[in-house]
Each structure stands twice: as C-alpha cells, then as structure tokens.
Length: 126
Image 1 (cartoon, rainbow, N blue to C red):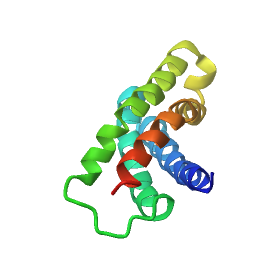
Image 2: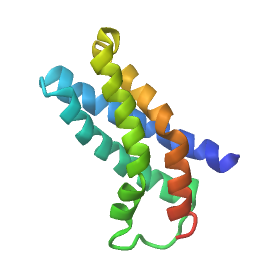
Image 3: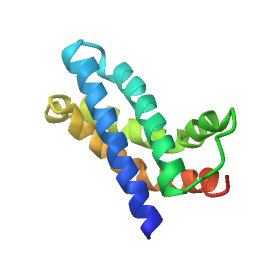
C-alpha cells in the first residue's frame, strides 16, 4: 500500500505538470487542446518516470538507454484510457472545455490503475 501511495504522490506531481503545461499551451498560446494534451502528457510521463523510478520503486542502478522509452510504451494503455476520457470530456462538455485541468484530472484518475500495474512491472523488476 505504501508503494501505491508513493505512486499516487508521483502522479499528483505529474498531474500538475500535465495540467499546467496544457493550460499554458492551450489557454495562453491558443494551441489545439487535443494536440497540446499529447505534449503535456509526455512531459508528465517523463516527470513521473523519474519520480517513480527513484522514490516509488527505489531503483538504485542508472537507467538503461531505453528505459524511458519502454516506460512510455508501457504507459501506452493507461495513456489511451487517460486521453480518451479527456478527449471525450472536452468534446461532450462545454464545462470541461472551459476547465481543461478538470478534464486532465478525470483522465488521470481513469488511467491510474493501468499505469500503476505497468510501472510496477517495469520499474519494480528493474
């Protein structure tokens, strides 16, 4: 349970990066929120990879050259769930379109379980 709580803490940090960058790109720069979300998600995945690697799963050895890519690939299913909920939300709801941070939160919660199991498989066995 402690590992899962650390994973959730890392996810909260990732959420802040994801929602913040999305808001900067879509809200301030006027980028398409669907495309901007792809970029903000990759940034968040990079942050959570580092935090989960170091604190959640306590991997001591240096990362292999391809570990980040494998992590992002393993996050693919969770990312699809996450992005799908986000995209459906902003497509169907004017309320969520006006509050992209909330649509990101809904997507993040939807993908949480899938991402935890994927991360555990890659990093706990690293």
